[in-house]
Amino acid sequence: MRIFDPHIHMTSRTTDDYEAMYAAGVRAVVEPSFWLGQPRTSPASFFDYFDSLLGWEPFRAAQYGITHHCTLALNPKEANDPRCTPVLDELPRYLIKDSVVAVGEIGYDGMTPAEDHALAAQLQLAADHGLPALVHTPHRDKLAGLHRTLDVVRESHLPPERVLLDHLNETTVKAARDSGCWLGFSLYPDTKMDEDRMVALVKEHGPERILINSAADWGRSDPLKTRRAADALLAAGFSADDVDRIVWRNPVAFYGLSGRLDLAAPATPPSLHEGNSILRGGE
Ligand SMILES: [Zn+2]
Image (cartoon, rainbow, N blue to C red; front, side, top):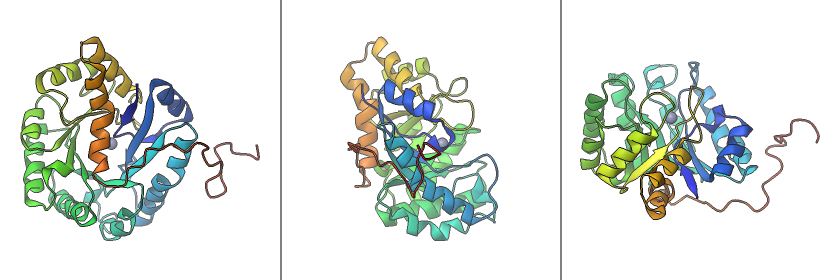
């Protein structure tokens, strides 16, 4: 089984996770830039993080046979901090990089005016750079948040078929589906979606435009959720072709809209990145 995790924060994960993911069939990941838990105090802190998503993390993934792309943006939560908003002005010089396959994650956290501005500005950046957008839907007031998100998408120059709405669930799937956007589901160990609910959703809505991700990060999460969902779908009677569509071909089609997706894993991964290896000493 080949698996593409379209939303996972590998910066927060260990090499054990990379090993286990490869063994489970994961061959490609997209890492969206996001909130690190600890508030950042200056744009420079974002730029070092972006460089890490463009350099060090793909290097680390390559050691384990996994191709790594990223999405870059000012995240919804820190869009409220005036110390961080100058990042919006500098994003264009990052969005031209080869391994950036979308603008994201953008969207709403607390649904504030500052978030309205950052969302609209970054949808425009996506349109200007020929990139799709990964849009996080809020964890509270989900349906109201989705409607407000869709209003901003409709007012933007980015067509819905270039937008992936993430963190959907039973309450938001129908409106999201009717909008023409791609549909992302994050599977967590004990909150939000799980494998059984995912199976029920695919039974009701079919595999079209559906993507499943682990969204694994620094919180309680499981980088093998994509595989567990795939196994649950097979056990529920879905064909291998349906499952391949959800866990491989749909993410390839969505991020392929960037024209930048390169899924050929290097035969021999580079041993050094800027003089550093994952081996720490001189081994
Ligand atoms: Zn995320």
